[in-house]
Image (cartoon, rainbow, N blue to C red; front, side, top):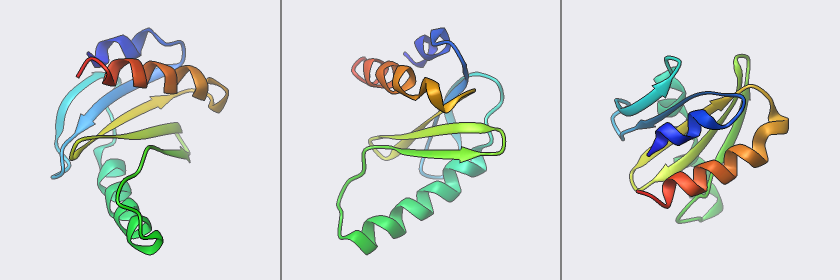
Length: 101
């Protein structure tokens, strides 16, 4: 199901990361799973500070390029791509892929 994300121009990798920081599924380049682990802790803090129960997605613009983090139950889908200008295409593809889960 996440294989389709590699068809989006500019996507370097996609990976589903479990709560323990292990890759459940991945396609494309090798992801840096520590990003998902650190982001999970940050998201937990932000949710607590804002009194939020859920989150939709988080865009990190890091040295290697943007990474979109999207919740999939208790897991996180990491989608790394080349250019922030591609964000709309990537978000659309992620929503379409998640609909197949």
